[in-house]
Amino acid sequence: MEEARWNRFVGCWLQLGSRWIPAVSAGAHGMVEIDGMKMVQTRAILSYIAAKYNLYGKDLKERALIDMYVGGTDDLMGFILMFPFLSVEDKEKQRAFIVQKATSRYFPVYEKVLKDHGQDFLVGSNFTWADVHLLEAILMVEEKKSDVLSGFPQLQAFKARISSIPTIKKFLEPGSQRKPVPDDKYVETVRRVLRMYYDVKAN
Image (cartoon, rainbow, N blue to C red; front, side, top):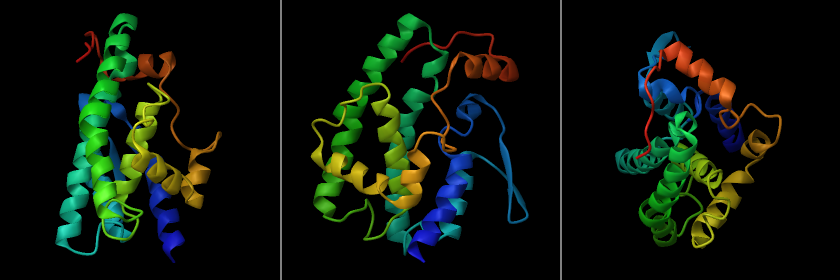
């Protein structure tokens, strides 16, 4: 039963994860039809799916913690989403900025949460969408610096645990539905669709 819930949630995440339409933050309007509803806003869609499959905590306190942790990883991902649209010079500046923010501000918080909580997951004793979101944030930062977790043993262990869940393990394998790192063709398509005639600058 537990794995079945993971299967259903991750199946939806494949389509709606943080790389679903990174340009949403630039003003795009992605829409998904689910359970007879037409929904926009990636965060609202993922929250609904998480609640539908009982991956949004067992009570209001757990849900508040999940929202807090997801909000933090959203902030970190925000520094990464526009990376492909930067100039070569600005990419190097942004890469350093992302790693600095991750290692000095965000990862230390999640490291402490995992250590103090003493469980395999961020919230309670069960897998929630906060765990998926943190894993995705870790993977995205690792694309900028492969050894970024070297000083974070709790996060290293967390990544290994979550990545070993069968459905997620399959999702991370080459050839899966996980969206690849955006390339030049992707960047050009997004610029054309969103009419991005301006230059994106590093933080």
